[in-house]
Length: 551
Image (cartoon, rainbow, N blue to C red; front, side, top):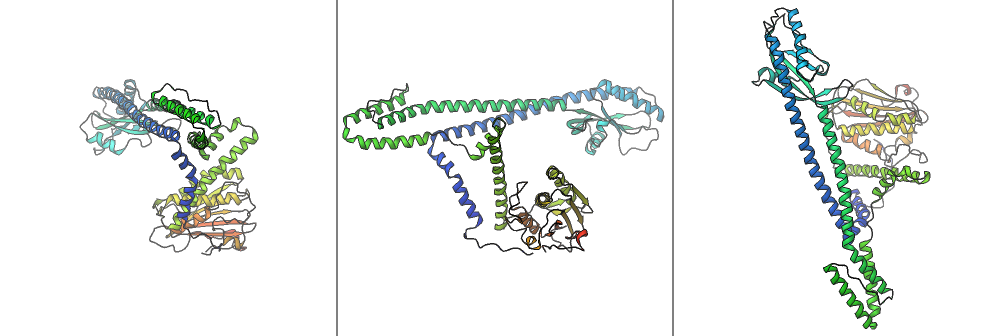
């Protein structure tokens, strides 16, 4: 693959070395503050230990309460199911049904009895397997809540072969409104009269009420934890102020002495240890009055002492990120100009974090330390998820994104995270430069490869630009403003992601006619790509092609 040539770097340091140097410079103020301020260390260590204690106790309480709620509800469910099963079995034993019509009427009566004897409306009746065929036996039936494969084969087998009177299993139930909730299905055996044989009775119980209770407990624990953190923070802050107050007084007294107020003295603090300090300090002041000749030197020492203590006790600074988040959370209370400034700060901090993430990823490729996590992956599904995830961006840009899945339904051995990132970068690039025109995402496959192409009808690029489009931080139009916050490394990382899969990332583009990026990946890791399932030049441009192929 061709690539553009850039300027010769002035530094010979490797990317990891430059990153370590940058990190050391960026964190130097924080490290200096940590080492120089006892107040910062005290409050930070106390806060971290308190947070750990609260998280540990909160987690334990949550697990304990959740377990108790589940066990209590399970016992209620088992008792309820046993009562309903006994009522159903008594009805069956008292019946003299012998034909299909009689059995069907018996089932209807039995379901009514089960509803009356239990608190659940979710009932399923299934004939046990491995029984001889009987034309009189009633058909299997299930209510809406248990009609979608909720009852597993494992539960059916336990009910058929087990020695216990009933068995239960945790399941996920679908509510009438389409939402899901946790539930329990209890299974037991029912013996029908005559030749109908043995049936499994399954009653479903929703645990939505227990989930709501647990959610309430979690919310209560969270509010309590936040309250405790705030309370303990205020407590620690107050204690620190009380502890450091005499030192502030000493610093203030020293400052006044250094300013020439020779009669000022440090008052007693009502504490044995600090009173010793006060007395010693006052004795020093008395000695200073008697030794005028040493005043200049002692004054200089005192000034340095004041400077050092002031530095030590200065209110701890927060990081830029924390300050930006606090301001961003309060932006609605600010005037228009200030709010816009805070939003810009927040956006740029986010973009800086993304840029750092991309730089770290590029450095891993440069260092050759990238390891793929291959797994069977459906490229169509990844494309669908990506298109859905970026639908709002496309709509904001006025572009209609269409997915054409010609093939690619069979799984391929890929690193799903990296492939998804490539498609996101290509689709984001198409939205950025598509000028609100349609975007076509096509997926296809053959015996050796799977491929996805992203076609836009935007500004396009010249043949020279296509040779440099995968270069780091290169932009075809430097004056063009980024609208979706790109870092300039997306296509470079995409090319590396394709290469590490032993795949291809190709591009066709023509000014005014748009661009088409094609990602081709091998279906299996040890089988080379014969040819790509998709052409890099779109079918509508084959006769008028004026762009270039990256390969």
